[in-house]
Length: 195
Length: 195
Image 1 (cartoon, rainbow over the protein chains, first blue to last red):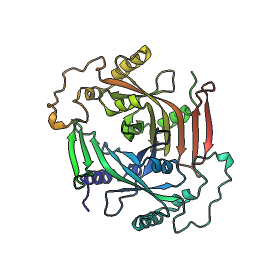
Image 2: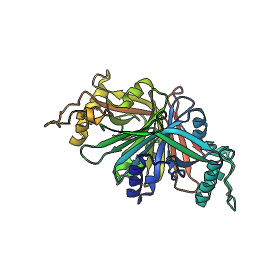
Image 3: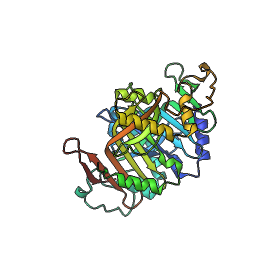
Image 4: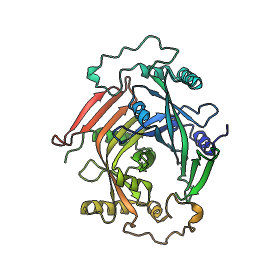
């Protein structure tokens, strides 16, 4: 596989912002069943091996899983504070749960669970997100956390087809549009556009 | 007018993150005419006087203006790095250009232009955003910037109807859902939910 041409500037941004833990946080927009956009912060967990696909984790019980089942297109907006640049990554989202047919993906799901901290894993034991607190029994944390992923633990994948990179530093600012061509040999094109 | 109940925690977050200039940056999701969500970083410019409406600026030529004309609902996602909390604000978006019929809003548009730095104003003189750079004549900055807003300068308003406040600090995390009731006397309700 070939690294997409936006991988190099993104790797650069990640490196130069590495002192900020929240430089790995980005905002993912999806479309709700009410045809309204939804937007929330998620944590970047690296790339799926040998691909240009971004990895995240999510809870099967979260709203975005239902939204993605109906509308699989999403756009992530990633702002890097130190270098003052923004990546907008649009593409198909995929949720990988326990019973996903692709063995490579279920393996990636298992590995990412093993990489989670205890605190990260514990969130998947929590009572149903978004439900009124009063109606939920007090949460009693388990003594030991499972070594294999809980059923509601999902790997979330974003395979970008369109990447819009804006650099605010510099006068003038610079902006590059990367576009994946589904038809012509799956190539990426790059275009410098006005910011 | 009454301050909505989410104004106080939001003011708190703004205050406690005030040392970070980018704590005033948030991500706005809108819906494209292709029925795909779009997402980009925008800068918070305060509240419209005597309202719970957030102010931003935008360029008439930007994609989001066309998107909002077709689908006026948007969701902003605002992450505060220092205090580790997130506000998701969903509501109607409104674009206020030169010929908007509401005099209060056109006045607010004028005032926000006057508050912009020269660098901020200059962006509205730039060639058409998103167009290929090669096809654009070299940009020749004007010697003096107008004291009144350029025609393509717009005030962008977000009037939240639903605010989801998540605090990651604390064990357990806490999450409050604020909902505006269009029918019943325009009141806000608050519900503590599972994070």
